[in-house]
Image 1 (cartoon, rainbow, N blue to C red):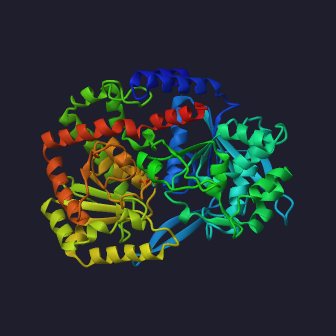
Image 2: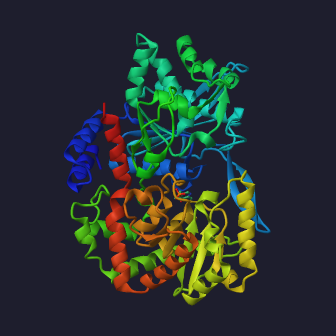
Image 3: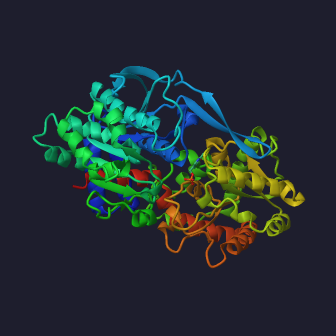
Length: 576
Ligand SMILES: *Cc1c(COP(=O)(O)O)cnc(C)c1O
């Protein structure tokens, strides 16, 4: 597809109004391979297609953003580190262990140049730059043999800062050598801010003053925040900046200006620097943009535009995606067509059942080659229903909620002939959630019904996430309300015609009231159990199932569309 066709399809779809389409069109015309959208990200997770396994949800989103840009013919360069160590989960008596594997960029990458950064101790740290082209997009990845793993040590540590500086300054230099202009830069979270600092330093050579350079820069930088509050973020001190950052900045005035941003304890969070440099700021769902609590250097609350995350086609079973297109529900750019709701009401349940069965077949294949908590393959009878919980084991996502009353869960699973498949890793430093995982798996082990019907898949990754999205029947998404910035795995569930049980949080709450089985009220656990039983009944009844699918797809197809997200970002760049 070329950009012009994409703009036409955006116009036809009714997702955007006239003025917005004009903006999108305007900016699309300015983009070219030499003036692409530059997307900076410390996480990029696309092992399947691009052999990079950097991160979790944030990295998945970055990979989806690139894939969507390619589909739409949008010039985009993703700049991301290549981490030389990859982490995998194994279980030892239900206790999580991390296994580290050394990795190098595969032969599909071209080593296209060298770049470097400076530090106080080593005047030059050489960096290798690899790249790979996919249609209108390109991945540029920065590394060196000792680059290390993603998130080494504390997030205020020296090595972390070094990696961030290597990406920002090193990446900026590499692109400049290639004649790529940094006119539109999206910073996927604050640790990529050094790309903007490098650009500002470069502008200082041509602009008359720092103020002028800042004014020019701010129009071109979009900061996309994915975190709710700055509390969890790392902080760096002046000495660290003097060691790693300042040796890469030419302008003394700029160094002075950055020095002015440290607090009275001589520390700074990168989000503050990012807020000061980015003229455009976005949050990743309506709720998140509203509640994200950040201040600028004068203490004023920062306004975030809401651009809800979207997903790429990768996460939709090809047969289902094909169905959306031939039935005119989605247009060629994956925007909902202007009459998609009427078309959804013509959904034929025989077709839906056949599509869902194809999804289940795919899941079965993956279940056969992956390990459960006992290190075995998983076999689930064809007539059983499958619930899934697939997400990082973070406290706020509440993987434990469904186990609050194990007897009740056992009763529901056996009376509804259902299985629960769980997957997701605790963060390596999150001892509490590792303990929680062990507790849950032990509890399951000691209950004969649960042992039969609850399966934990080791080493959650794209393959497992995708297979469960394609082939399970109903997903459980129960973050503490107000703590999930957006979440994308629930989007994968909706897109694949599954049922969703969810709290009204993140992107799910973009639509009010939420259009799925809602967990809410005084007793959320009770509400969850009630909805598990409801879901089982709905799935077995064509009429009820269709009503639920029409309701959730009508509400969420515009939300989950990756091209909708992309078009929104273009529009932000267009705004003065
Ligand atoms: C989709 C996906 C994620 C992101 O899920 P969230 O809902 O945003 O937490 C993370 N990891 C994998 C492997 C995924 O497939």
